[in-house]
Length: 125
Image: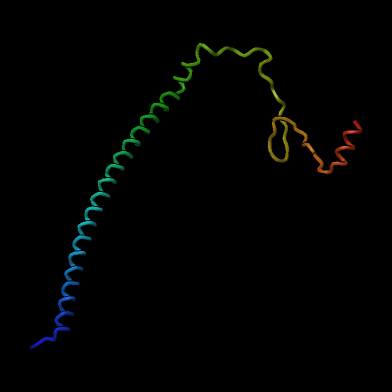
């Protein structure tokens, strides 16, 4: 069977194209595997850093909890605290209001946005 030169050149071109696709795919596969390896190593490094940070935070939490124990806090202020002076503590009479318990009676402040009324109120004083 005799092939024409046009068919022969098309066949050779097709074979070169297939070979180029195969070689390109091989390089893409190798590159993808390298990227996966790099990403895995980076993830491993980040996880190690995270574990170290969690360990440090746990250590600091333990120290904070130890320092905030009542016995430790009392020991720090034992020589500094003294009894209160007679008029040092001021007791405020409690009152009940519709909004709940209030510890001091506060009358609401009313303001006017009308400048003429504000001027009139100031001149009457």
